[in-house]
Image (cartoon, rainbow, N blue to C red; front, side, top):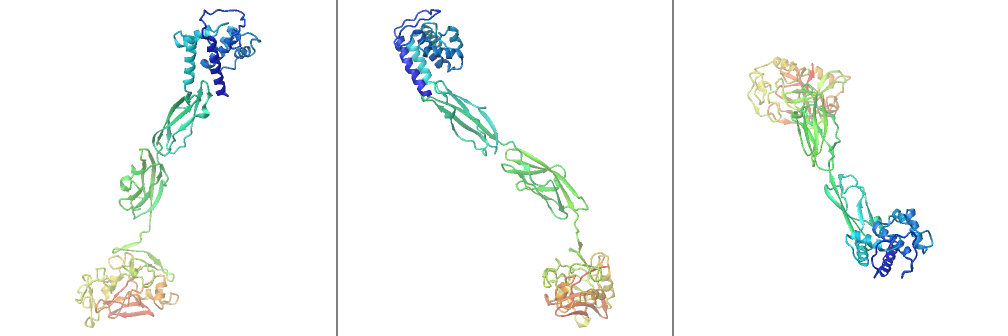
Length: 513
């Protein structure tokens, strides 16, 4: 409808041009009561100048159909002068320009004034008409032309408005070119354009700058508890749209190392509960754009039962369900509690009776046939023996075995057992393994299934030092003396006790005194 209206106006202007060609410019004359005069367009002068006023207002000032005066003028023009004649005051109220009470001279004057020079009416109307038809719509952004958007935040299009002098509201015809990538930082441009029916195009741009001003957010706990005697502390974790670098500062931060990429924090030296039971520091997560998030971290140290450490090995303890006595949970020198009777990691060392921790107990220690002349200064070799020495490794130094019995009965930690522990007597082992009310060990399986979890570690032969029957038979020394021999227990396909030469290499299990 708007397009047709514009074309009708242009057609009517052509008629006006025909009417005005040859007309002379005259001085405006005010006539109180206009008298209709015939003209080629079929309208009286009064009607024609009213219509021209409307057209002039439409072209130069835009439509204003809402005022009473404007409606009065339109009614007069369309009724062939049969309604109330508009007054000059009506024209002013209706904001119609270039019209006096009778003639078109004022129209020519107004057009000329707008162009700053006086020209003939036909040329000026054509010039104004050409200007209007070539003027693009007025395109206005809603909101600012330069916006800032936080990364990963949805972008809401604000839009624009478009008004054309002839086509009117063209907002719905606006085309937006481009898009906003909310994950890509930097300036991005949207182009808005609209074209009227005369192919005049208006274009504006909006710049959206995507920024990252949000610091990383920590998701890891700010308080944790770790065991003493190990170096694991905490793993820092934070979330952000870009890569994160971790660091720590303040408090006890100098006691730790931190991996900047993974956030893994470790103690430089394993903590000891008895020395320090709590550490603090400030953790910082920095993203790729320098935004920092911080978290105060507290690490508490858990007091761990450190076991019994003796001669480089660590032991736990077990309580006898038969006697209530406390025993080491593994053989001396064993790496762990047995998982089976043939578990080589729990065999432990092979001691010659009454000897100290001097290296001879290692399963692969070298051998010598030279008798020890001092039970406390024996070297590190496994001492082989023969019948000449009653198969003893220190026959001349301690023929009765009393020195060595006293040594293994000691609880000060200077012997083979830890402080507070000693090698049991034959009676004490019998109470746990063979007496009524005990586990009644009858073979290697019973020995392993007992509360002592005894392995079938075999033994080292007294005359050669060779290992024998490992995984089949087990042997344990006692501190008891029997004549020129000493007592031990055994278990394999059977079980029992026996007295034999002191040069054998058997396992030892200690009892708290």
